[in-house]
Structure formats: structure tokens, C-alpha cells
Image (cartoon, rainbow, N blue to C red):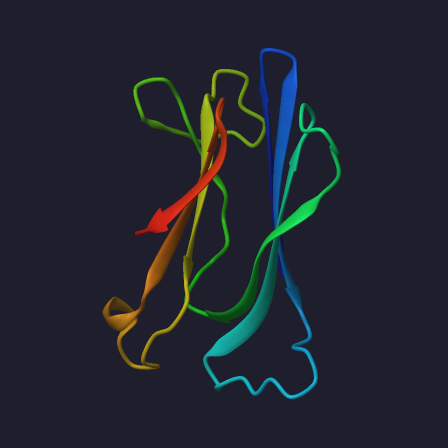
Length: 120
């Protein structure tokens, strides 16, 4: 499973990639979990290579879609939106198998300032 997004703002390219991988040795996953790596790249960073923004267990209830928003905060639906000013990804770090609402969500936001994270 993989989700990828790219944002072009003022000659600056920012990429966000969520990638499901096999868990490291010694890490046990629950039936409703996968292990995820989240990578970020900024073309104007001193070292513009992909860096890992997150690694860990994630509930399978997350669909890993990267959403784009315009200046007013409305969702932009096409895959490479020219009028987008931000992209975002929410992941569910834990949840009961029978109740998605019990999960702990983390929000990743990419805009002209780079990447930021918060509890969703």
C-alpha cells in the first residue's frame, strides 16, 4: 500500500510518501495494524533527499489518501492539482478493531512552510 503526493509552490517541490512495509524484527502487529513509513522531501532543503517523518504501527482503518486543499481550505479532487496550496495526510495510530472512533489520529500538513504535524 502506498500513497504519494507532490506540491509545487514558487519553484519549490515538496513530496510526501506513505509506504507500508514489513515491521522490523521484534515488532508484533495486531490483526488490525500495519507498519508504515512516512517520507518527506523538500527541494529547497539543504539536503533535498527524502527523510523519514514517521515510522510505526498504524491502524488499517486509514486509507492513506493524500488530500490537496486550495487557498480557502476546500478539498481539490484531481490528482495533480495546479491550484492547491497544501496537502495533508491523517493516520490512525491505534484503534479498537470494532470502533474506529477510539483511535489516536496524527495529522501531517505540507504547505509553503514545509511539513508540520499535530494531533488530529
